[in-house]
Structures are given as structure tokens and as C-alpha cells.
Length: 240
Image (cartoon, rainbow, N blue to C red; front, side, top):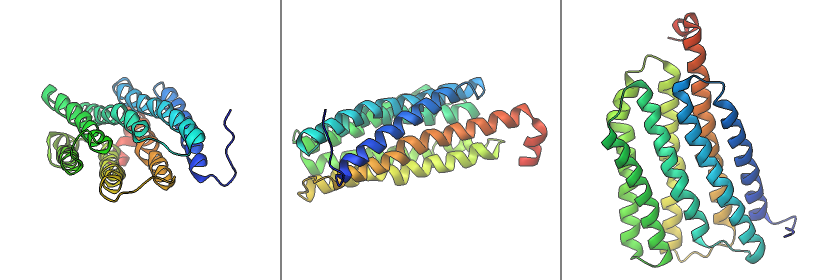
């Protein structure tokens, strides 16, 4: 068993993020029983993203305890699965309001996977770092374009429920601000010659609270409010 020092902030951040992901996963799984049927798939996808984060965080925590460094592959393995799951959650979130096309679903999934994979190739040295960074950035901007200006945004605007519209606003903001840490970290490590002394790991772990945990809990909250308003229409009229 690895024993961490009291002043080891990076180890502490891994532990806090790990326990937070466990708690969020359990909450979301229980939450599937509190919402209407159409919300279940969205919340399950968020819980799976947190579940994947648990495994990735545990492995990274053990790597840090053994060598006081975490190879970049530990981060990318988790992102390569959890980010496409969250993109799917956003798709089905909008699909509740208005049916989205199958083509849009596959474009979002494929682009999100390629976004992570290309960045990994650049950081691992299998691809020119500048080219990998630019391609990954384009993929991220494509996802943002769909969220802000595509069919999903049009569908949400038509929603008759204010909590659904507000929830989409905050989820989209997380993808814009929270996910910005990934290309930023990619830029620092690829072009700044930065060797992670633990501070980058702490930053990634802190953003995990926003990008995985808050993301999932926000969707659960919207699902609970929407379910309640549909159950009690008189409250829905007051909400509007």
C-alpha cells in the first residue's frame, strides 16, 4: 500500500477527485429512479462517464504514488471514453425536446473520439505536436459550433420548459470553459516544454469536478425539475 505524505497536494487532489467521482456516480445511478423515463438514458450516460473517471483516477493515483509522476496516457485513456459519453448525453438531452438526426449523433461521437486521440498522438510523439494541437482544436470548435449554432441549439430554444433551456446553457458553458483545460494543457506540455511536477495533475483533477461531476449533477437537477413540473402542471405554469 502506498502511503502519501501530508504535504503531497497532487496525491490529495487525486484522492478527493476519486472519492467525488464515486459519490457522483452513486448519486446519478440512484437519480435514474427519481426522473421520468426520457431522462434516464441521459443520466446513465453521465454516470458512466463518472464511472470511467473512477478507474482512470485510481490508476493515475497509483502511478503518482509509485513514481511521483503520471504519464500522459493515464489522462487520455479516461478522456477518450468519458468525453464521448458526455457528448452523447448532450445529444439525448436535446433529443428529448426534438428528434435529432442519426448523422448528427455519429458526427459528434466520432469527432469527440478523434479530438482526444489526435491530442494524444501529439503529446506521445507519434504525430507532429503543432498539427495534432490544431486538429484537436478544430474538432473541439466543431462540437462547440453544433452546441451553439446547430440543430441542438434550435431544438432547445423551442423547449417550453425554462429549466431545460437554462440547464443547456450551463452545460454548454462547461463544455466551453471547463473543456478548455484540455487543449490548454496540451499546449503547455507540447510547446512549453513543461514537465509535470504535480501542478498540472492538480489542475486536471480540480477541473474534473466541473467537467464530470457538476456536468452530471446539473443534468440530474434539470431532470428532477422537469419531471416535477410535468407531474404537477400548475407548477409549470408558474415557472413560465
